[in-house]
Image 1 (cartoon, rainbow, N blue to C red):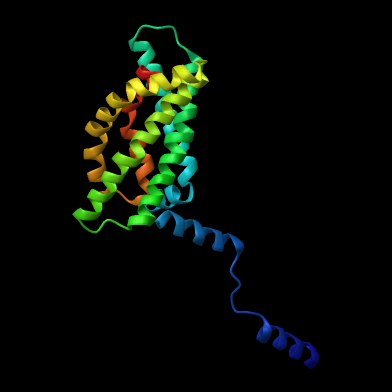
Image 2: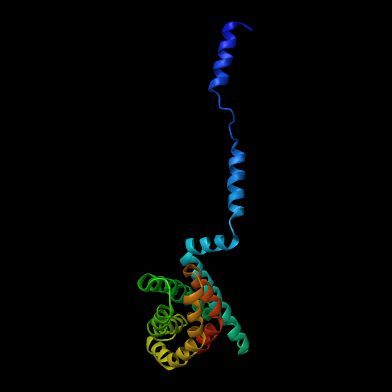
Length: 206
């Protein structure tokens, strides 16, 4: 080869990088890293990123399913409007509202680092949130299924004490466990799964 060609070739070899990673290699590396992430960490990250939508969906599913079971147990024809009302109130009031309430408790009282904090959160949940959410659920389901405002208030007034007792029996022990052992981002999801029996109680009340 000519001297000029040799000089040009040497210059190119000197400037060119020794190794250029292929796009597929970078993609494979990212995929491998994602797969290496523990399943529990991925679940916690998903619950944190989809905090409100996940709470709404799960509570709507639980409430709607519980109402179908309730109506089947009573040997009644399926009242679709009642199922939709239960699912809708569950998604908005108990799902979104409950998730925001738990987040508020966590920000207001801080992480649970001892029995006193756990008892404060459990007490606040029962005395402040429980009467509110039960009353709102009873009112909304009654109104959405065609009852008057007066009848809806009467229904809420009659059934609130019984549902508060059911709340105490189910969720007081659960809250002691929830605020001690369950990560904050997972609490709405776990509570939705535990509220099936309570949802049947609401369905029977309105």
